[in-house]
Each structure stands twice: as C-alpha cells, then as structure tokens.
Length: 174
Image 1 (cartoon, rainbow, N blue to C red):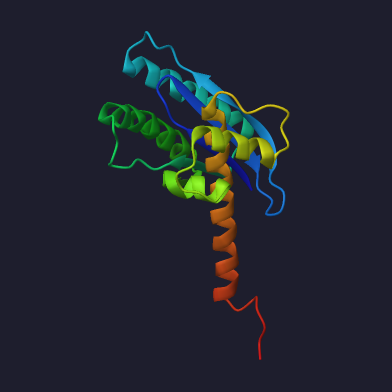
Image 2: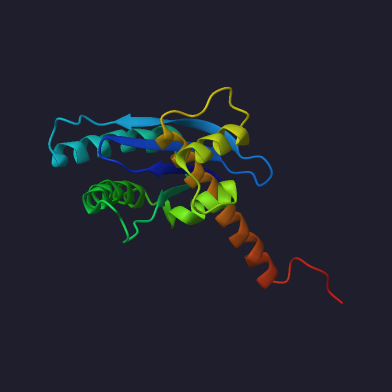
C-alpha cells in the first residue's frame, strides 16, 4: 500500500511517501512544498492545491494520512491556519477517491518513538534511524510527514490483522 503522509502548513507543508510493508516500509519520496509567505492565504491555498495535485499524480497513493487538529493550542491562530491547509489536503485526497486517515499528534509520536510527547529532534532522529539516513531529515516537517505515514501504515496493518482475527483466519483453533 502506498501512503502519502502530509504535515500541513501555509508556509511549509511536509510530505512523505512510503510503500507500506509491515517489517520494512520503503521510503519512496519526501520533501516540502514551500508556499509564498508574502501572498494572501487564499492564494497560498490555491498554490497548495496545485502542488498537492502534482504529488498525487506523481505517486498515486492508496491512502493519505494527516495529523488531526487538537483544541489545546498555545497559539490558536496557528491552529486556524493549519485547518485551512488541512482542508485543502482533505479535499484533494477525497476528490481523487483516496482514503484519508487522521491521527492525533501524540499517537503519531508514540508510534514512532514510544513517547507521545517526543520533541521535533526526537522525531527527526527516529525517522533517520528508521531508514538509516545519513543526515537528519530537514526541515522537521519532512520527518513529521514521514512519521504520520508510518503511523498510518501501522494502524492499517493492525486493522487488517484484527479483521483477520474477527473472521477466524488467525490464531489457534482448539
């Protein structure tokens, strides 16, 4: 399964594309979409949509994973701006019929580092370790996007296992 993880932002949006394999997910691509900070929010949203369309065309993901918004932001304006970017991401994915998965920030961090309150640096190091990268993924938005893609792969893998269990295809029958 190909998963596109996205870390939304209106200046920098990180993305990471992985091919999910339970024991060894493959890193396909990762990077950022840098939006023009001096332009209006509506213009940045159009620019983001155009860039996302290109990513979806290039990578044809089966699923798109993003971080959920949460209500306890120290900077509410940041949450509102992130909400605008998330809306465009969700719109582009669903227009194409791509499955959308959303995860809480602490679940993403927990799935990768074992600690739900991991720092940006810890997340970067965990992603670096996951794929034996020579350097830390920069900027941190890239690591965040790859982390959400990995979290999605793990969650979908668990759903598949649980579905098998529910249907009696796994486990010992006595």
